[in-house]
Length: 142
View (cartoon, one colour):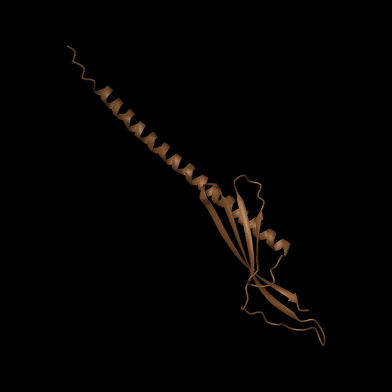
């Protein structure tokens, strides 16, 4: 005599299928979050590189202002669309600008000038990086 079938296999298969669906949805959500984080990291890196390029361009140009009141601001071209950079140079007055030394009698003296370069890089989605670089320049006095 045969026993009547109860259908337990179908119920177990449906429960396992539902559990697998929940696991796949959790994995999909985790991958979406990782994608957003990677996108933000990329934008921040682009802004950092733009600010760094602006700092290097200012250092290469050697366009130093004569006084603390005068500051030069420069907008740098960036090859990446949507990314921009700017830099500002200012002289720091009153922070140890010693006359220095001379090269013998009647020789030229030297002064040490302190400057600050502030470079800002901006990328899409609001990523902004500000780099500050202090510079000491040894200059001959007239």
